[in-house]
Image (cartoon, rainbow, N blue to C red; front, side, top):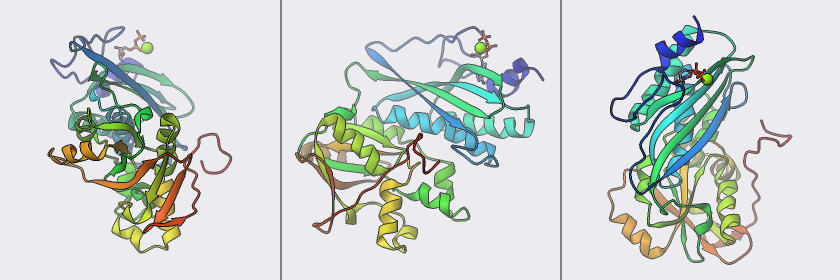
Length: 309
Ligand code: ADP
Ligand code: MG
């Protein structure tokens, strides 16, 4: 089967009305809504590095979309469409069927269209997705807006996926394979959150990006970290390791003034949020346990570090 029939069979599923021209021409055509900015991001998954080679293809398809929608959500934007650049070592129909189904399932769940891409042969299975979204001009939530006195909040639970990676038979493995991008919450935070990031490389490291960009410090109250019951049975150091340095959470971490937090609570939130700390004017990230200082140091995931892969 040639490249074109792979595209036709698995990836040409038009969603009428969403785009002016989708899969099948040299480029896709979109009409941006008036007064909106285009929000774009890309993320690549490499087999053997971002997921084990024997991972369920449906989960790979889902996750390759979800991680990008999480980045769109972290700007406060509304996701619109994706492009898929797929490099395959060989044509494996069972794999392509599962993968494309997972990808379309995630697109359908969040109202996103696959509008184009590229299909090539390469020795390594590599999946690169580009996501596009919209946001009202000037309303994107950057990493750089955190203010002293803001609450630091995180959605859902942290550490689930890292725990799942170490306990492959545990139900939390689902959180590793099928992350939920917090698309609705991201949009609800527009006009309210002062800064935001999605947590992909560990909460401590990703919050660190907000602190650096905003030139502020923060204190985290360890007892307030939202963790699964399965983690609470572990020694505390291990719990904190998963919650603060585990990767693949795809939760939103944001800062918000106390007044705006009250406004946020008036909205119908489908995702739980927790206040886990406060922004301060110190030059570092510190940790407290029930108000008592604890010195902890965490390193999240780094692609070119010698240690973890
Ligand atoms: P070109 O050679 O002009 O780049 P291609 O042959 O690569 O065109 O692709 C043909 C059409 O199929 C294009 O519209 C492209 O966006 C789309 N396409 C190619 N691969 C994929 C894919 N994996 N998923 C979705 N659309 C794809
Ligand atoms: Mg091409």
